[in-house]
Image (tube, rainbow, N blue to C red; front, side, top):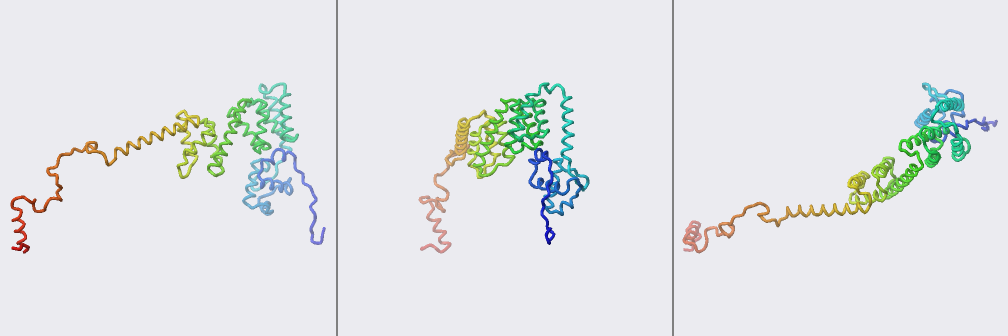
Length: 349
């Protein structure tokens, strides 16, 4: 120890391997940091919020979020304002025993010869878990094989998909992914191949629209694209053309693109050529309607076309062009003018 009371920190803190294999990959950075800190100072002890606040390793708001995440992951148990760490090893053993009992009593769905299943599980363990796979993932494999009836290649590709999405070590996320595949019918190699083709189409369309709109598409945008491709059976080329057909707008929204696609598909249109012909015919029809409207309201319309009955005028000379005091050549015109002028002193006689 130095004069200032400082000392080197050379101690080591144990951390169960099961935490790294099963839990760590699914935690946020703050939750992971908080768990490591708690494991260092409060392992085997109860602690409260104030104790963790006082460490100031995170802001109070981020501390609250991290603790909530750790409780949701079953890594911490809360009792009032007090917390303690879950004994991961003890719980893992208990859950494994319950799983084995359930498996042995399940009967019909589980084959007597598990050699193919074991070979698949070993392959998944070596490829995705570096030879150390928690039993919960074995449980997931069995659920996929015996309950969901996945073909073995589909089960392997499930873990490959989890790896690509960064969730292969998160058992909760993997279970959700397996359930989605089951609900959508991706249980055979053929169905999975179609799913991969569709996924590629969705990703390509997402990239194209992102460039056209000059923005990063969010989850709701991607759901729209999935709907167009899966439910409406639209190709990425047709979707791009639908976007370009709306370029006359100041701001193009995906709702505009969707309206165009729905209009096309409801008319049986599936290709860009068919859509182009449809739009050209619509444009020509709109132009004909516009020309007819202009004809009805044109200034050159005759009175008969307008429904007005015209009669011949009594005189062809407009009223305002006639002489105010009679016409020249009519009897008495000169004397009438002279009499009026005499009244105003305008006569030369």
